[in-house]
Length: 113
Length: 112
Image 1 (cartoon, each protein chain N blue to C red):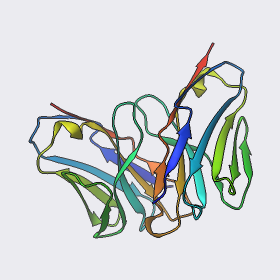
Image 2 (cartoon, rainbow over the protein chains, first blue to last red; image 1 turned 180 degrees about the vertical axis):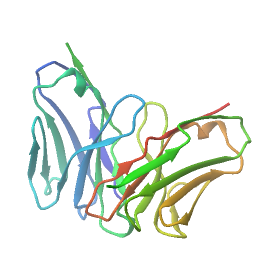
Image 3 (spheres, rainbow over the protein chains, first blue to last red; image 1 turned 30 degrees about the vertical axis):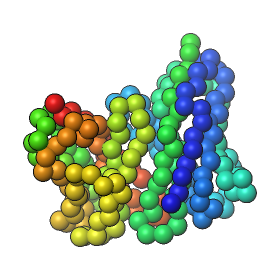
Image 4 (cartoon, rainbow over the protein chains, first blue to last red; image 1 turned 135 degrees about the vertical axis):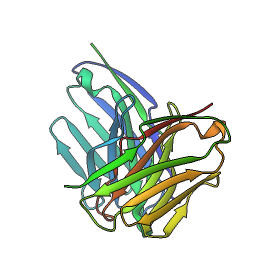
């Protein structure tokens, strides 16, 4: 089955700096890669996603890049703000029944004032 | 628009007691449904998924079970809870393989 590794596990940045979270996946057939943000005690919420036929996608201050050859994808947050502090999860979806998502282990991002 | 409802929000149960968590989706038909568990400060572990009524697959052997009595209803159950069952339980749905999951608000279960 699919295996997703995520780094770093914790990340501290100064407000206004950029943050980058990286994930690798094992199944070359995976074709969909979402990113979720989970605030303390809340549900994970989809913030951006990318499909395997696209190399990069941007939505305001967040962007995701995908390198299919290397089987890795990254989340980039620019001009970080205190409200960006949360746990971020990457995920990969393999082809097949049920379209299950395999999640990374999460990155706790802390944006310091 | 589609919405997902999950209840209860919090639950404190003694060891050995039964469990029933319910999740329903509105505004769509034949959704894929999922149960995840998240231990404190940890990642998301897939427990069960379902692509249709009475079509349920288990990902992790444990003392939990799942049922889907109706198209948009997904239930997580246990006959006897263990301390290790404590965690944050999340239900999620997706329409098909082209969409990400939408999670319910979660149930925080504490087994004492």
